[in-house]
Image (cartoon, rainbow, N blue to C red; front, side):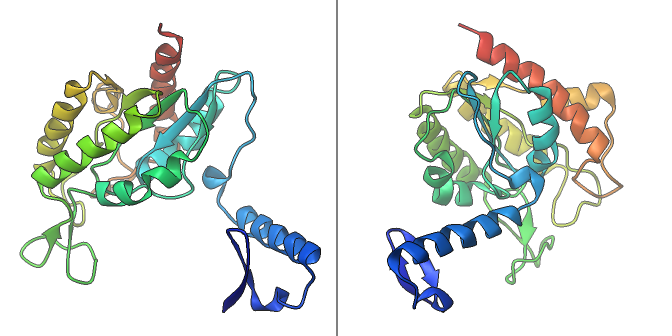
Length: 242
């Protein structure tokens, strides 16, 4: 149970008898411990102040290419991402201010869609119709994405959109035929604001990059490294553009 507050931090009961200074140290130590438990792709990085700041917002596909993208852009940019799966546009609308934080971003590479087009039952588990209902209708997705893009544009950062990656046959809770519809809806929004596109799907098709296994939307570590290499080129070009 949490009962003692210090600024915006909350201290657990075991620290309630500590003095103010000791309490502050204990809270920092606790936060540091929690941070240390994060997987590598969610660990915060220390910026090189001489380099531009890049923020990656996206689903588990983006989680897979975060570390290799960071490596590919070493010495070029500070690559950050929220310490979470950014999921669907509903969560984006709820969390976007938190993810953007107070810092200045030079470029934001973003995607939502794979979680919007999925179907879930009343318990939130993946399930195709008739048991499952789509997380976001096509109209809701387009409307939500437009709101998110408007918020991202307020940062003044260069924006790069990544389409939602392929949905293979047999994918749990997803229908492959929905993918082009959602990407088309997203492209309407992206075109409206003249945002640059990282055509990851074109790269996947050209290089014949397979999913981890049949019926799975994810990619292997090796495939994610390939995706990161292609996106690194796109990001480099965008950062160097006038």
